[in-house]
Length: 108
Image (cartoon, rainbow, N blue to C red; front, side, top):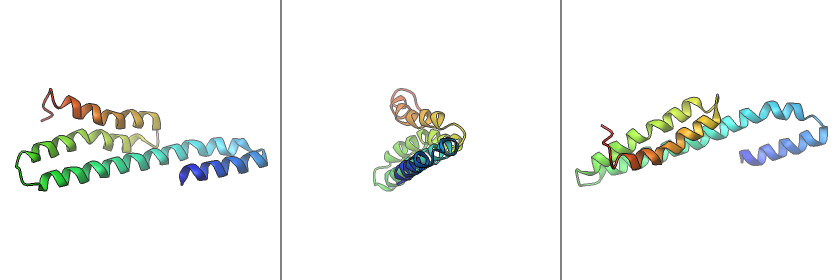
């Protein structure tokens, strides 16, 4: 939806020959898009962690804590996405890396 709004605004700016206004709007759109993606990823991680915590074998609690600890980078991504969307993307891409890393080194 946001991408569609961006293209509509781009077309309007092209017709009105006022590209400066669109250039001022582009960072805000990318920050908002980054925020929505990071928030969605964080909610998925939280949901998976809560499901793991409620499943019967007690060993699943350790996996859930690992997910929550790796999810800290998604909270960091939410914190910086309006200022530096590219940095937030790097933080968000660190989540699977941290999950793999926890197989070799314990996170707690």
